Amino acid sequence: MTVTGRPASAGRPVYFQYVAHARDDFFCPEGHIQMYAIVRSGGKQYRVEEGSLLSVERLAGKAGETITLGEVLVVADGDNVKAGTPALSGAKVTAEIVAHGKGPKIDILRYKNKTRQRKTRGHRQSETTIRITKIEA
Image (tube, rainbow, N blue to C red; front, side, top):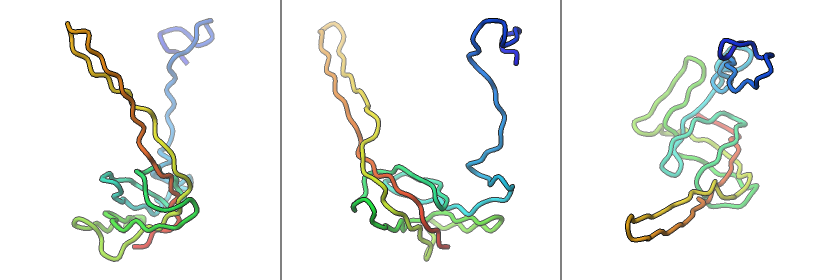
C-alpha cells in the first residue's frame, strides 16, 4: 500500500492504512438486518441489540440482577420499524447488570492569568455495564 507515494516496504513505518470493511455493527455477516432498539437511559440514547454490552450511567441493582429499560424510542426488525412519540407503549428492553465501575478520568483545570492562580481537579463518573438479553416490541 502506498501512503505518501512510497511503498510500505521502503523502510519507513506506515502511520495510516485505510481498511474498507462492512459495517458489522448495523448488519449481520449474513447480510440481513438484526433486530435493534433505541433506548434512553440517564438522559442519553443508545442503540442496542440482543447480546450487546453497554456502559450507561449508574443504575440501581447488584451484579447479576435483571433490569428493564422502559423508555424505548424505536424498535426495528428488518424493514418493520416502530417509532414512538416520544416512547413506544408496551415495548421494553430487558438487560442483565454485568458490573459497576467508573469511567475514564476527566481532568479539570481552572486558570487565571497574571495572578498565578491554578486549581486542578479530576472526576470519574460512575457507570454500570449491562448486557441486553431481550427486546420486546
